[in-house]
Image (cartoon, rainbow, N blue to C red; front, top):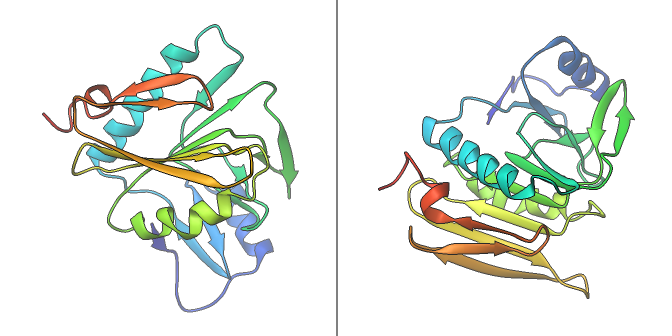
Length: 191
């Protein structure tokens, strides 16, 4: 994640125009525009591996895994954000934001951590995501070691954290009734 320009602050109108004219993914925060791109091969492989595993497990169900290019409406961090992977169930519900469609009902969000985004993904982005009413589960996936930190929303609205470590481990995803085998998650990344 890199800042587009630090010389000046951008208005939301300027941001919307940039997004409409570009094939790149940008996020907006407090007048700054960030280019969301340039992922490492390991980041891409991990995301693809999780996407493939969840797509297989969700087949025949009214849920779907969605790659990182979908806009997510995040009420406390307007106008929208991008997760590395999103899962939603039921009808896909979008809101039109200045002519741009943003998904409003994700259930599970996955971020593959990189050195430039790890702190933001663990702290601020997670807090932003919590403002999404349908959001129930968050995965933070390390790149350099077989480690997934999972947060699951509890009935009282609190979030319970858990970490799974090691290629021989697996993690249960209660929000979508699926499992991830870490050996599959890290295929072609770690041995």
